[in-house]
Image (cartoon, rainbow, N blue to C red; front, top):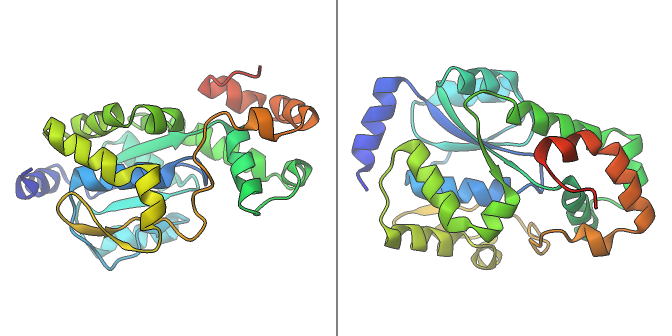
Length: 241
């Protein structure tokens, strides 16, 4: 993989960055690690997570590079840059009922009603819909990250126009799998050819399962979420049954 050519191409196009976005527990860290390995960037000391436009501008001003960044909250400046093809944006979504179960499993949430009352779920839904509605945003489902990682890695590589061999794709899938990531939490990871920080923190991964809301949530909570999150579920094509 010729990273020097890749860097020159980005400089010529004045594309400063690649950003992976998605609400918490949506698979954004898993996608970040995949993109990071595909891009094959060098380790940086710069903190690449940003929460708002001020933080995002600060990162952009520090250096022109292919440094991959991550974000959980909708930032209009990023959406504008992706729309204008100044930035590459990769967005991941997940069944919001599974996201909520993940929060409960990690002890970050006790009752579904609590999040409905304080608008946390609504904020997550609209952040996701806004990003997914952004022109030129590359949209990837969490379910595909888990079930079809080879296809996702190939899709990322095609989008960034980086040629990968079948062996490279296999290695990236192995390095970024949920099973391997559990072992790498809190460590500097040796990726395909370079070290990087996986961005997983202690207890970051609950179990990574899909459709766990069906057996974890009570029938009453399922009904509440199907009604309250109907716009999100319909937008991303998740079944209410």
